[in-house]
Length: 219
Image (cartoon, rainbow, N blue to C red; front, side, top):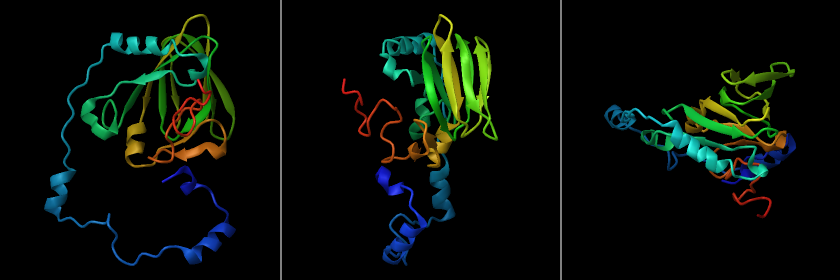
């Protein structure tokens, strides 16, 4: 699957495609039938063990990322993952925990995703611009200890002010949406950049990377 496979089409293009579409009249190769015994033998998943992260380990990773040049400022983060969650890649099966570092004067440009995002400010000061229901934008000014819950599919952008780094603790339901293949992002800003986050459609989420994951600046 490539990005072009899910490109938007007009009704005229659809009507031209309809007569030549491939037809399927029998069960295909991914369609299986399981008895109840067979189903419940595979639907049961192993439990996850408690996961415990020392902040010193997180901080070491963030300090290394802090040396990245400004072009990486739109995402300077790491995530804490419980290995027992497997392909879900979460702190728990359905919950993502991220740590985001923003230097003073930097911004995370406007973007949106259909995962809810809860931001707790561990350090720094600044504001987050959020598009609320109805289209109105609001600046939420935060400092250490404040929390912002950003609704799903709401445009938002972060701006770090003051004279110290901003450190955000971020919680999202991203693994749940990714598991159901319903995770969507729009980044950078623009309807043409809306994409379903499934294999083959979005090799890199970063606006500083090209479609192959290489540095778009050529460095």
